[in-house]
Amino acid sequence: MMTETASSKIFKLFQKAKKIAIFTHINPDPDAYGSAFGVREMCKDMGKVAEVFAVKNPESYLDQIFPLTELKTKFSAEEFDMAVIVDVNALSRVHQSFREEISKAKTVVVLDHHLQGEEFTNNQLVDTKMAACAQLVAHFMLDNGQTITPKTATYLWAGLMGDTDRFLHSNLSHDVLEIGLKLYDAGADTQFVYDKMYRTNSLRDIALQRKFFANTKFNSGKTAGFTIFTQKDIKKLGIDQEMIKKFTNCIVQLDGVLASFLAIEYEANHFKISIRTKGLDARSFAIQQGGGGHVCASGFNFDGTKKQLRRNAKKWCEEILKMK
Ligand SMILES: [Mn+2]
Image 1 (cartoon, rainbow, N blue to C red):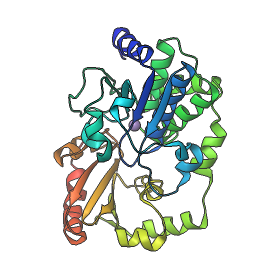
Image 2 (cartoon, rainbow, N blue to C red; image 1 turned 180 degrees about the vertical axis):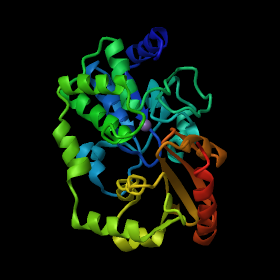
Image 3 (tube, rainbow, N blue to C red; image 1 turned 120 degrees about the vertical axis):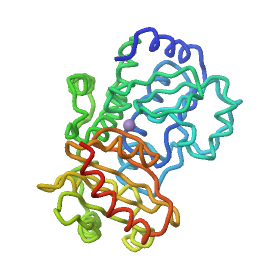
Image 4 (tube, rainbow, N blue to C red; image 1 turned 135 degrees about the vertical axis):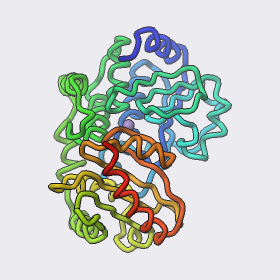
């Protein structure tokens, strides 16, 4: 639990600033956007000028939940009093086009729930016990006497659902449910979020899911699986990376499967690997590979060809099963 003093100290910075720029990590997910737009709404309700800066991925369900047409892409530090970075605690994971200007910002604040970070600002509110950054933002608002409007509650709910996958992951806690209840009571449009995130399966989604299983290789015991999506696959399906991530959990959810890897090629020979596990320490494994994350959901990067990736993947499937 965050200390009261850290929270109120950071909140004072929000009170002082008039124009606030909000950032998040590259390839934003529901928690990234949910936290960013949640903070934006809080700032607006406080009478501030606030903008979210991000480079969005191609059209996906995220465009239907969040007002992504309002995203700003050109940031100039001198036009703002403060830069707030949510759901990421490393400047290297913020889009490259913003980094230089962020380093010139008068005040930088980080609101996050990841363990690994770079010390680039003292104004950090980081709590790794939070399942989602949106959960931390909700606490931040409530602890500092801010009313969560239905609009803000909906954004934060989407973030909370994204990072817990509707209370599915082992990051579920009393506090997650309590904050969920508070967002519900604050008027979060839970059905709207569920419809956009989980209930809308297009024919393209079904084709993608079929391709997902077709692209998955299992170890001999069928206890670990590995799925690769190359840029070629992605182009052929007419989709974007974010749409694939919707199915990240589908392999580990299979009976008997304890671990799954999903590799998505973002640039030529640059893959992002997502690990999902049941009762195995995915986080330690990811850290060994230079990545990070949570115990049951984590990730790392891999640079190399698909062939090299395949070879490594076989090894990873065996190694992760030992991560008890
Ligand atoms: Mn998050």
